[in-house]
Length: 130
Length: 321
Image (cartoon, rainbow over all chains, first blue to last red; front, side):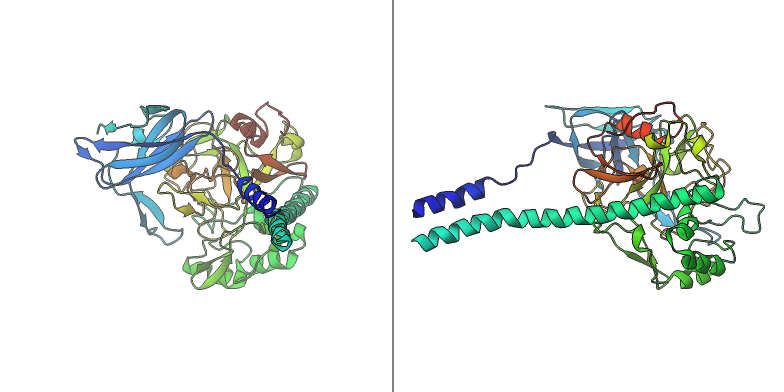
């Protein structure tokens, strides 16, 4: 009888929750601007048709990591932002870019960086030209 | 021995029961949230019956105006008399000198408004499931932060600006427009095929995997709208072309899918224009349809369908999933 009881408990524990969904790939790489590694900022992946998107943080040595499902992405690079008080005090503080990155890398319409994320394809280095 | 068996069985039954109780609680909260949206939807229709149009998402005075160059107020304020909150509306109207003051509540000039709304809240602007902060402290006053957002359309509409603040996209193709009210006859895709208000009631995650509050009103709650009095024309940089402030407050343009929990880029961080429509409810988000019904939009809805449903006149009168 006790065995039955224990079995019931064991079954109850086993029938738990299992998480399922699309496979998520850990994507990493390095961002350089000119010849130097980019010192901080954000790298954003976006698939404009499905809306899948994620943002990674660029470390001081130019490396980044980001979690992404399989797909092909447009990649945007943005520098770190700093808060600046508005001059006339009439509106909330604005965010200004701390570093000079060419404007074309910041918009999904003009960026020429892209990435195909899938099996065996999870490292992407981006070299930005000034 | 039998006692052990009985205890084990009871243990199993309780293990089954506990999640069910939690789910029942969330179901009740979702129902309450849905009721809030229903009231807001009916309020919008009553507003339309009175003025012949929906309220604008925000109003900003033109540069020539005595109040020019300031942040105006939002549709949430204009909606108050239609959801049994006339006294709140009058209070803001009086404190702001009939909406002529700066609605950025951090400015010195906004002190009367700040004092008038301190610690006050409209219960139906909150979603009970939301884990996000209920108030924000501004100059030591408590300002209500809400869980719902106006939808200005989607970024694939022909009248949109893809170079608003930080390369975010601002649309003029939804039910809520800048400066102008939309009447039902302007919703040519059909009021039942267009949603106009969505939820922002859950946490999202930022690029470094921290939880993030991505609601569209980071500075002054639901009281403050845009500073910009223009609207996108279809050309890029048409919104705020004169070097004006083109940040989005209390309004969003659909760019990512419903219930997305990952910040896609700086364009999805408030006060940029593409803050995600997402909720704390599992599996999707509640939205107000322009016919004043409330629907649960599943997160599996294809992005192109979500966008068609957000645009009021793109010629794609798709049905809700």
